[in-house]
Amino acid sequence: MSAGDWLADTRTSYDTVAASYAEKMRGYLDQLPYMLAALSLFADQVRAGGDGPVADIGCGPGHITAHLRGLGLDAFGIDLSPAMIEVARRDHPGLRFETGSMTDLRLDDASVAGLIAFWSLIHVPDELVPGVLGHFHRVLRPGAPLLAGFHTGDETRLKTEGYGGHPMKVYVHRRQPDQVTAWLRAAGFTVETTMLLGLDGDMPGAIIFAKAAA
Image (cartoon, helix red, strand yellow):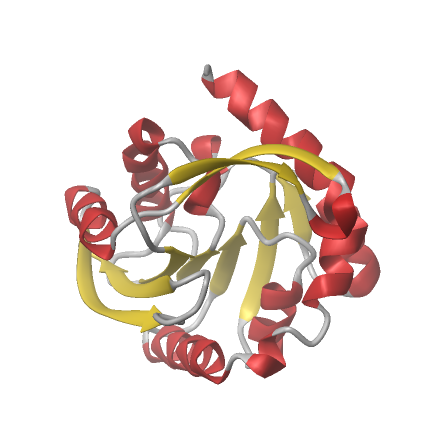
């Protein structure tokens, strides 16, 4: 599958499920105390580094962006799906949201004080992940924190039905933390710690804390 194919399929799929996905995410964070703790620690790291704009890449309907703003960060969101961005702007007026792709991130070098990619790398093919992480490193200030969340495992599956029963066509890649850690280090990040989530559940995940090396 070409880069254009998977990007187009991902964009169309999330355009289709945008409203249903936003509804599912309402209040979702309140059920996840460990994720809330990770976001709070990330906010502390951004403030310790001197504050500044924080990019939520693959922001979806903006629930994480809005939570970060509630923690006092100057957070803004970027998503591939125009429909997701429309929903985010509707649900979180006054916050900055824009369409864009993490494979061609249109942000200036060293322009953000923090970056979060929560379960947004899961659709990116393996061969493109290093380039995406390279973009993340480029736009982060030296020493600025990165928070990356993803499904853990060893399989890739095609998701054909999504939120609300709507049709989708996206590949979901589950990855081992060691693989993501290796990619991060190769992209110039210092990896600080990994938090494992839902180990006994159907959808185990991980959150990696890293910092952009100077």
